[in-house]
Length: 113
Length: 241
Image (cartoon, rainbow over the protein chains, first blue to last red):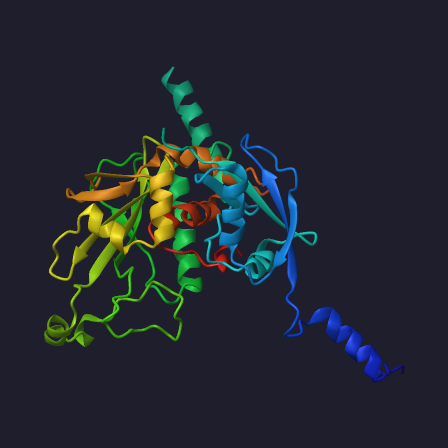
């Protein structure tokens, strides 16, 4: 019968793995956000950003509002869901991220006047 | 002619139910009345499993009414006696250690010491009822809501707006897609406020354009992610699973 043997990691190997997969207190994981125009809204010249995962979604919304000079934006993710501005980008990435990025769609909602 | 029409109707009905069984995606952003019932049950179920801090939605069946489709159960979803805003003078009840939530679960009436409250609390507690009702004319769900004091006196819209988080107010003021009107509740013969459904079809279509097919069982989850924000109610992300 064959049995598998587990070789303990060297100290070097162990620390490499831990750096890749865990966050040290001093570094904050960044999330790649891809802003996608829908419903005829203008396409941003720069649409891809890296922001700290601890940021709230409100930051993305506010950024879009400034860039598009509009307060009435409709912002949503690819799973037919409009996240609350209080959600953390980390949580959104964990739930809706795909292919290493979080796609955030935006459109103009119908404004008054 | 009658036989042919009957057969066609039978075909249509079979297709409607096949859509429901297969949970086919929504093409035009609208719901059939059967679709609404399926979506409502799925929504209430997911809410119950994922949102323990708030009471569950109940399904209120409509009986002895002129039903849109005879012999099919119709109804609406109801969530009542919710406190939206924490009164600073009150002690938190059922908070479960979360300072970020602006929603408290309504304490059992037996545990409320009304005498003490009247003496100590400057602000009267405001309670909210929410109903998700199907609109046959727009073929989408509509959120009805009302606010009232512990004595039952209805709250005006100005007072209600003070209870809403600032983000909600922004949504209500900026967008034609989420605005409030007051009209008689379709089943309760009393004035309620509602989020007007005229824009729903448009933004539901946008929501489902993002590369994900929206199926009937998730329709109300997606719908509520937008509508809930306008009235200070939040959907946990896990509800999409």
